[in-house]
Amino acid sequence: MRRRVGVIGVGMSKFGKRDDVSVRELSWEAIREAFQDAGITQRDVDLVVAGSTAYRGVELYPAPPVSEYSSLTGKSPIRVEAACATGSAAAFTAINSIASGMVDLVLAVGFDKMTEVDTQTSLAIGGRGGNYEWEFHMYGTTFPAYYALYATRHMAVYGTTEEDMALASVKAHKYASMNEKAHLRNRVTVEDVLKSRVISWPIKLLDSSPISDGAAAVVFASEEKIRELKIDTPVWIEGMGYGSDTSSIARRGEWTSLRAARDAANMAYAQSRRSPRDVEYATVHDCFTIAEIMAYEDLGFAERGRGAILLREGQTERGGKVAVNLFGGLKAKGHPLGATGLSMIYEVTKQLREEAGPVQQQFKNYVALTHNVGGTGHYAYVSILSR
Image (cartoon, rainbow, N blue to C red; front, side):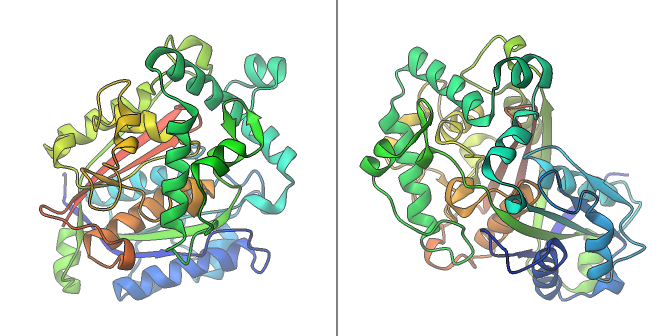
């Protein structure tokens, strides 16, 4: 019953502090653009999968009001959540609903309004994203502290430096400055990053992604529906892998890599019959700068401990060995949890269709990858897409 699935429409709101809209209006920005891109209307949709963490917003059960506002009532029976990988969980559910033969056309929409609580409350909510009793309650561990643990271990084992991590931030801000939908559009230098306020050493303010509001939407369709709609340039899902890990990071036994991401990548490569060498463009989960370096290694773009070399040599810049996060990444584009995974598919689709404007990567084989991590490796999804 396995059927081929493609992307036929993508949409994304502007990310940032969006006090000008409700979560319903924010989501409609992305949905409307995705519908226009695909050339469809609400009548064409068989199923809606909504992805939202909702823990920081006034709407604790946001899928019904979002669906109602977008005239999709009756087609939205499910909301999914996988922390920072919620958008990819929505995509995974949508893709498999089509691949199974149950439906032909699915809208996956991810959204969150993260700024409706203050920063301290947001950090406290995030600290409950792993093991509440033994990490947040007993030790007050929040997400910057989690990634600081990974950073210090990576530095101790492999010699990675604060300057290496700063390079990831500089790259993210450079490309976000060219993305009109990005949250942070200011350019920064290595010195700016190193001098920014320490959050949890060695993680500093400019090593960290912002707290953002945003929405992203993707229209997926079966190969048969794509032919029926006469879509000229679908982006095909070649493979989608997943992984997960223990709630407590103390039980994992290593702190320089994310097993869930490695497992997800291996599954995606096997399904697609691709290897890291085939990937020409990637979006990676750079919630903190050390996460981008670890992602290079977990995805096989670099050997363990050598991810920082890709940054030093510019190999992940536009035109490099594998271009990464040319829309600004989570670090500067923004990281509204429910939207992030689908915004990655939005970005990859724009790149593969050669619609990325000033940050367009040059392709030979038109193969791209998305890498989305939930929590500190509690969940992970990796997708391989092609045109």
